Length: 166
Image (cartoon, rainbow, N blue to C red; front, side, top):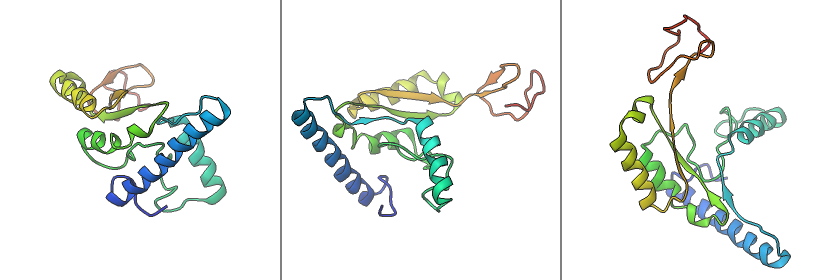
């Protein structure tokens, strides 16, 4: 809407305005209609992929809007933004208080990270210290789709069966 996302000061200000509007409208409708309206922040990956494809069919590819494989949903930092897991938590935790029905924050870590228990514990504690109510870690693991071999290292050819179906 303004050419900046919520990883910038201006983008965050707009995001807070939008999330305040959603939260307040849901509270109003909940009271008025006696139904359980709420704001739920979810990545909804499948929806974001489908929505992007439909958007591209109708409007084509537009720079910085539809030039990715999927939309970034909710309060999540766009996955193409390069930052540390701690920076991602810092940004998303500013918006989690506007949810009235639940939220999830997750961070991506490389496959080797899953074996560093101290680092994983530091991330979980950092998220909890920032009032992240639901936190998840996604570990990058490369897998052969033919024989099932997987490894923390990237590979283009399976070292077990030689397949390129990775």
